[in-house]
Amino acid sequence: MLPAIGPGRRRSFQRRVLAWYAINGRDLPWRKTRDPYAILVSEVLSHQTQITRVLPVYERLLGRYPSVQALAQAPLADVKAITDPLGYKIRGGWLHAAALRVAEGGGGFPATMEELRRLPGVGRYTAGAVMSFAHHRDAPVLDTNVARLLRRHFGVAVSDRARTRLLWDLAASVIPKGRGYLINQALMDLGAIVCRARAPRCGDCPLRRSCIFRANARQESRRPLPD
Image (cartoon, rainbow, N blue to C red; front, top):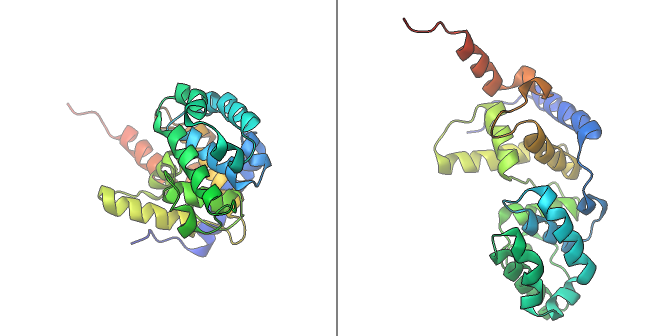
């Protein structure tokens, strides 16, 4: 069951997150395009990898293979020579196989969640990201940073499987109609920059006054030490 989020609390959450993002959002090259191919590349390369390491590889890969058709025609070994230094070496194979699948289908990039999830290596998160960032649909995204932010802020404390379903529902419920692209990017950045896994910067968070994680931490710090 979703935490009780009244309309006022939801609007406040959305307003504060978007206001923070307008000032603090990261300037990333894939945020300057709506090309689903480029966005797919960015998401696959960013998987479990720091953005600073992704940027030069993203630029090199798209510089050499600027379209999904160009990537499909490339030798797999050449693609992996660019992507493998990032680690998690399956990602080059995923991108190449996805490009082949698109090219074999006539070159039109999938435009629905169902079609996207049939591509090799594309799960719910990556499909949602392409739908949100390329097609500006109100599809939720739930990467590690967004999941941590939502879990902490709304005090989600259930079993792993139930928690994952609940967090996906939460991610969908906080999207302002027609602004999924913005709120998703904002939540990703806020989780990465402020609501960090270690040493979260709670004092800099625009949601600090309504965050259950912060309230619990402050309450814990006030408890007297045992004798």
